[in-house]
Image 1 (spheres, rainbow over the protein chains, first blue to last red):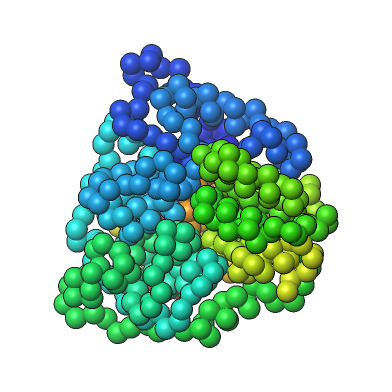
Image 2 (cartoon, each protein chain N blue to C red):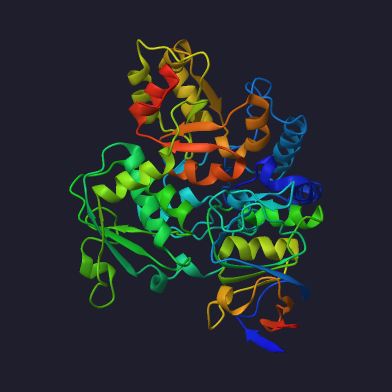
Length: 369
Length: 135
C-alpha cells in the first residue's frame, strides 16, 4: 500500500482520517496489509530540509493507517523483508516494483493496485478479478534475446529499462531469453523495478529462471514472435544517454528500490577504507527491518563512519524530492538505480546511471570516473 | 463535427482545449503538480501547463502514485479537464475514479494523431465519446 504524504496529499489524508474515525469493527483490514516507504524519516528530516508540512502530515497518515490495522512496514521490498509471496497467491500490491517481482519471479498474482485500491482490498479481503489474476494475460507477447552478460545491478536495471521502453500497454508481457548468467534476488529486483517503471508492465518471464517460463514453448501460445536483440552496445548507449556532459556530482543515492541486507553489505565493503567527499551526500534508503539488521551487524556503523547517510523507511523519490533538491542545492544525482534515473528527472535533477563501484568513486572524489 | 469513440470511461463529462503529444503520462514522473506544468525535460510537453486542458497522450507509464495524486490535483484546482489515452492502466483508472477526473482510452485509432493540438473537445466518458467541436 503506497501512502507517502507527497502522493496522498491533503485530499487523501482527509479520506484516510474519515475511514479511521469509523467504529473499530468497521475499519479493520481483513487481510494482512503492509505499507510502502514513508515520505519522512524523522531522524533525517531536518538535515534534509524537507518542507515543514511533511512531518505532521506523515504522522497523521501513520495514525490513520494504524487505526485501520495496517502494518507500517514502510518498505518497497516486502518480498525480501516481510514475506515472499507464493506461486498462485492472489494479492493487491500497491507498488509496481513489488508487483512485478511477485508476478514474475514468484508466480504470485497481482495487478498494480494504486492508493485506495490496495486499501479497499485490505478492508474487504477482495480484489477485482482482472489482468494478472487471469491465466490468459500471463502469456508472453514479446521476445527479447539478451546478448550480453549483465554484471552490476545498474546493468540489470538498464536491461529492464530498455525492455520497458518498448512496452505499449499494461497487458504486454515481455519474455527474456539468452542470459547466460544466473541472477539472484537483487538482480531481478533491479530488472523488474526498471521494467515496471519505464513501461507500465506488471509481468515478465525470464526463460529458465522464472517459474512460468521453463522454456519458450511454455510461455507463448503458438510460435514465439520475432526476437528483439539487446546487446552490449544498447546498454552502453543507454548509460551514455544520462552521462552527457556531467562530470561533477552533488549526491549519490542508493534507493528505488530500497536496499536488501546483501546490497548494504556489498556497499559497506566497497566503502571500507574510503571517505565520502564532504561536498557530496551519499544516501542509502533502507527498509526499517534491514536498517535494524545493518546496525546489529555493524554494517551501518561502517557506512556512517565513512560519511554515508542511512535513511530508514523512506525512498528518495517519495520524500518531496523537488523541495529537498532546491533546499540542499542538489541537482547532479548519481545512482545505480535505473528506476530512479527515470523518475527523478521530472523533479529537477540531472541523474546519471552508473555501476555501483563508479557511484562510490563519485561519492568519494566528487567526480564521475 | 467529428466524433471519436473509445472504450466507456470514468468520470463526468468535460470540455476543454486539447493538449496533445505522443508521449506517456505519470503524475509522479512527469509533472510539477504545484506549478501545474510538465516538468520532465524529456517529455514532449515539457514546460507546458496542463491545467484545464484535455490531455491527449499515448499511454500510462510509471508507478502507482498517480492513483492518489489525481485527486489532490483536482482538489487544488490544478488538474487537466480530462485524460484521453491510447492505453490507460489500472493505476490511472483508480486515480481517475477517486478524483472524479474524466478518462477515456482504447480508441480504434491513435488518439494522439486524431485530435489536433488546441482543438476544442467535449468528452463523455459514460459512452466513451469524444467530440471535436471546432475541428
